[in-house]
Length: 119
Length: 107
Image (cartoon, rainbow over all chains, first blue to last red):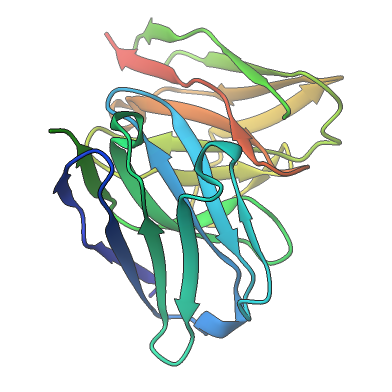
């Protein structure tokens, strides 16, 4: 059974940093690209970033470029999202998601982790 | 970025009815359209991809279609467990973009 379990969220002040983790199991992690998708409270879904299966390439939405960094450790089957220079508008639930092979649609999602940026 | 305009924002229907949710893409996405269901407090679940292909385990009362850049999700014979918010997403081009969502309530 595919499982994605996020951790690391919480309350953080504007301008500070936070690192999210996503532990994957139930599939061959290093065969799949991985992604983060966020959802602001009572709002819709927004793709945040994707990393290739081997970590060779990363892709970001414009609003997080230069502030967020997606990475992975295939030996640990873990995905990460480093969030720097956080802003109030980054407040959201962040989901770890697995894209289908060769596609940017998401067939498995984690339960999500809440990040609240507030002073 | 490709814009996905989803309608309606909310709708209310009775058990056993059929409802349709629509998504309009701002440009041609070549049938690369997915639908997700999200129940309160839960993560989204993939229902349909490539416009009309059902994800494993999804009931056949869910179906998808397209007409040009307009995409539709139809839910037949509504069940109580179908109460949720539904999102469309284009998976044709980066960045992948979602519609604003449709909240379906059962009367």
